[in-house]
Image (cartoon, rainbow, N blue to C red; front, side, top):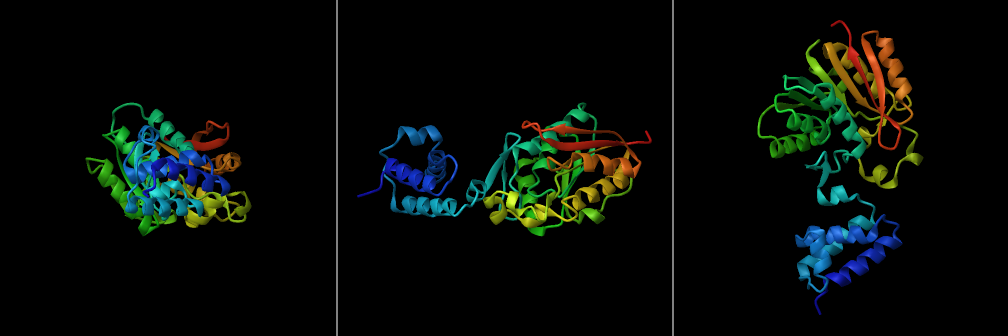
Amino acid sequence: MPLQLQHYLKYAAHRLALAGVDSPALCARLLASHVLGLDRLGCLLNPARKLTSPQAAALAALTARRLSGEPMAYIFGRREFFGREFSVNPHTLIPRPETELLVEKALAAFPGSRPVFFADIGTGCGCIGITLALERPRWKGMLLDNSTTALTVAKDNARALLHTSNVQCALADMRAAPLAANACDLLVSNPPYIREDDNAFVMDEVLRFEPHTALFSPDNGLARLYDVCRLAARCLRAGGLLLLEHGAEQGAAVRNALKELRVFQEIATSCDLAGHERCTGGQKGGV
């Protein structure tokens, strides 16, 4: 007898709940929506829908992946960021809502329509830089990453979402990025900033599935943050802005690093919606 949608939803939600998966019923509906091409309402309105053998097999395989702890974003191959869907895979970090603060600050800092040249350092799937280019069509930018596999995802997202060539992707280490001195109006980055010995404080599914090179950094998590600060001191033009995402306890260290470089002014930190210090910025002096 063919399996009905309602039976799958009940069975999958039960197994996901036993495995400790958050929102198991919602998770089951999302998996079913993905396989059957239904929206969430469609799943609710068609409980007696019969599943074909291929559909049942596909749902069993996806459910097993979620039971293993694999993030939904990797199962679906996409994640929403700033109202748009970006392709992701295990070679890229999954975009987080708190990173939207970085984009909001950048857009607010340059509210007009004048051209801006920006660089997104450690771009990953490209969600920050591509979003800036979509929100400000006259802006041009460089998306830089030291991972060829991550950069491939960023290029695919740029092709899918942008209808112009106002961003370029380049393979580069943030310590030696191919940016000319005094060339950028804006530099944004969400670099690795978790301490290498902080595994116990990282969610298990993040630790097991997301790329460690994009998560962890030496020197108590500060090394890559400091690298971006030094890069910004060189490549920003006078009046240019650095915006840097960091951990909730790292705001003071990033502010001190910018002060010590002696070229930044208007140094300030913004908090995310949870009230945690999340984004520090500074303007290069010498205007």
